[in-house]
Length: 310
Picture 1 (spheres, rainbow, N blue to C red):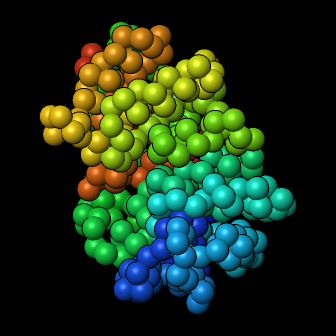
Picture 2 (picture 1 turned 135 degrees about the vertical axis):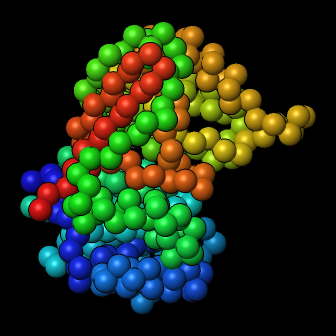
């Protein structure tokens, strides 16, 4: 009941915009992208409205999300853009009745709030994958677009990552680790702390990525996770892309130093190199599905079940 259904041609895709607004041409580009895949985009006419922070008022953004969740004729909710706004909708989403059939919600960045809720409250499997406006603007390389297509259409039930590197002794000692992946954007995950939907990384690999955060802020967020107990029963941490965040004095970031310190501090495995986040390459990462991580010296293989079903 928690697996999502593979997409078929002519399926309806519900499009929502829970965070920042997109330009009209970006909305149209997203529509054309879905049409190119022979899918039926369902985009609310009032999706975008002038607002000082978001793509629309909270109640309208929630209305769109609620309709997508409750629609009987669609199985996929694809988010238009990230930014900020999803967490403001969670108290309203929490009042909804869980649908009998799980849906797939796709997005990254701000969508981490929704992913965390659906995983922890409804047990859904979700997909950390490119936002629709990015695909609509042609910013995803053809081979990665093809990979995403195969996953969504059920032609690739497992996705493999081969570029991970162990950063500490605990990671190098791993032989085979069976777990699941949760997480997403580090800053958004920090915003869950102290809420009913605080990130739960127990018996899970915690995936983290971020954009434009300086080293000291990354360190501070990780320290809050540690002090808040998030890492206590965590199977390990996998770092995706961290970009931006250059130091004013040097023009360079100090991420390597931050992660080197954490590699020494942690008694759980720490890996880097997952090709996902805000960098140009944004490979899909299924959350809350079975995964197997194998380490052989410096070689690391991570296989993740997509979580879909026919």
